Length: 204
Image 1 (cartoon, helix red, strand yellow):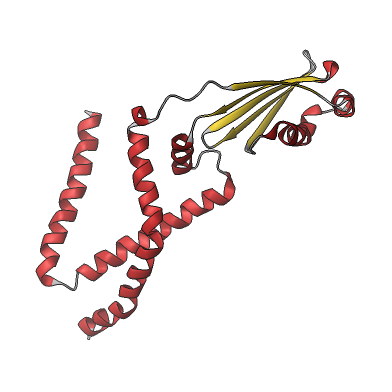
Image 2: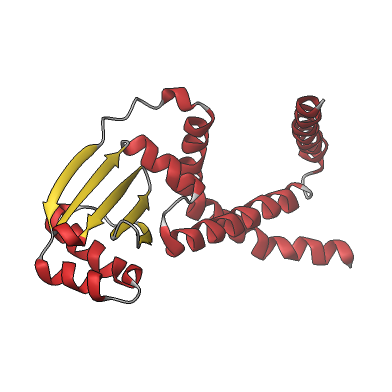
């Protein structure tokens, strides 16, 4: 009875394994390739020099920053104006207001690059530095989920769950092939032993 129930489970485990593997095909290829590039950072070409831009602020925006009780609350609005004026990509924004210097500092991180801005409202003036490190740096940051936003973070979690389904269903299916079962279990044990051994050796 137990064997019959186990055999019946293959009716839904097999298609689940097949569909999860097809869903993960290109995703696993992406994470595999970027895993190699992350582990071999010397493959990444040297980034170009960052671009520097000086820009006049509109008087109305400068006045808002000077009159606000907490000028850092206007950071998003200021950054939006800079983006549209200079033509920059979006990213994760952090800000700081220096009362002593009467200056607003913006730090924008994105996959493969950043923008750093110093805003001087008393002088109606800003200076920024923009760095783009190339497409390989973008892919590496996406692999790690750095500065890619909440949606990408959820995508990585979902991909990991589907990969877990793919792995466990494959392991379950191999249990029903006696001729291959011993060899595959030995290979799995060797892979786990190699990983654990290298980890222990690294710590010693």
